[in-house]
Image (cartoon, rainbow, N blue to C red):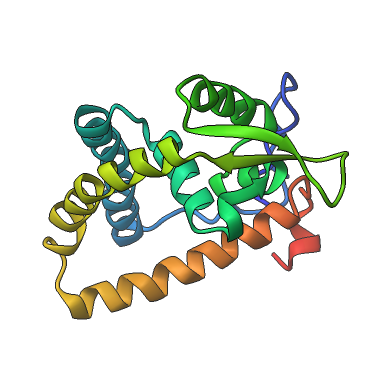
Length: 184
């Protein structure tokens, strides 16, 4: 069963098939999930507060600038930038408009295909990123790497890689709601 399917926007959630037993979390799994949920809730909020305080950037703005800085020519199609930042095109459009207004990036037609628009990191945007990066790195180090022993971090990395693959696979099968079709 694709547990991410809850119907389309504005529709009622899909009902659980009556002939399929839900796979409830046991007590240990529930404790582990609650610990993960706490980190998933608290860490992004703290990283965002730190970025706002030290660099006047929110997480998404910083992430978009960082992704552009690592791409050839500091340029990326908007559709690709939306994908690597996990943003809808609408959300990305608002983000790009804000970053353009601050002089951190500009939009240009894609020279290879005029139907697409590229986001280009400006020198001011690169300078902003370079100024923000040490603060962000310190936040990540103090909140994550200082808190976790290197051997445990290797285990976390392996687990996160598997979870990322499951998320990628779920994104490719979104909308499937037949438990039998998913081998359950």
